Image (cartoon, rainbow, N blue to C red; front, side):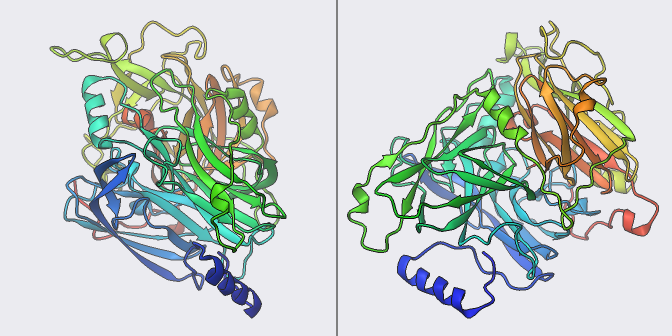
Length: 578
Ligand code: C2O
């Protein structure tokens, strides 16, 4: 919430607190200060859906604690690992200028933090404000290790929209009745698709539409005739989510910590790793009803899918006693069909970057380096003397330009920085698909992928265009692609195969939305542009963890520039060793 500079609002807030006891974000003071956080990685028992299980958490909290800062602040987050698994923390969407050491993906920018070890994430938030998230970046630990990362504008700065009455964080997640690490390890062994989640959650709570779950329901209590800022974060592992509140509409004002041209909608679509800020204007008079807050997947997956619905409840506070309000009916909103690709495409086409003197766009108008990457599923052969449970007795794999990424045993960033790449990675990541075919037409018979630890190299400040092309190899499917260390502009998107002659004629180079994670449409393509102005090693992957585990990922090396401030910072002394 914004700091109040006059007495009257303080008084109103205090009075409001006393009357209606409201959850609020911690107040933060000055800009440009150093903030210390301590993350103790510990296991605790958590009960949902009448099942108690042990889960890895930060500080015993599920979901994890919010990290709140202002633009320009310096963060020191000391992570102490007390569990038997390795862990790292990724500050999803933070650009980490010249400072990949604090980015977090294991074996890419750092060796994981081993049991009984500590690492301090040391970074400054430069030129960014808005809602992001932090999450673990080792195997599937992020299923339970995630939380909000909220960057407020600098103290004397304001939002480019009317100041909201309250700010509320809504973290969407996924709940597994069993241990997610065991699920993915078993799937990688057998080659089959992993078991899907058992529930979705809002702020860790599955809500009343699941068995034995009504008491674990998120409740948003609002006052009439106020504007609330909802910071909606999708921290689910494997699912794009539709999000809606019955009889209310949203004004979307921000996506992935970038302001957008405001637009009205009753439905949000958020991919894993994405964040959306919306204004929710409450009704002038408290209605005699409550309203379901629902989230449910948008999915084009041909495999198993958790198609359940998480529900929270929006209710109006009257500040009288609540025995009457308990009996109010709860209104349920409609949701589109689970595979509503047209609804998904329509939603993403509405996102436009807010452009003004304070927030100019920096879209490359000319391109130095063109890349065309296919993204999709494939298979690897079953090892001898094993039976595999993937397609036709193979193992599931996924690839970018037919290369399924193999994690190295040493971190790529250190190997690059200390010039010891030998045996760790190769720099021959293909610029174009190695064997062109009709990517979204009849699938080819051969579905095998190659495997390797390959990176693509970019000169400092190159202007880059990357076209991501979905494939039909094992069925078309949407893929939320996330690029570390950067925001990018979505200059074009469409269905079918990208046409390099005609499609660029329709690019938006004026107000394209700026994101860090974007969905490649099912059976479609996505064109993004950015300037390679942040030297280091940057991971790019599908933010469905199952596809990441299957290898739908690659990494970029962005070379140093000539000037000292265009070069990577030296590594911290406590950088973990592999
Ligand atoms: Cu949010 Cu590499 O991830």
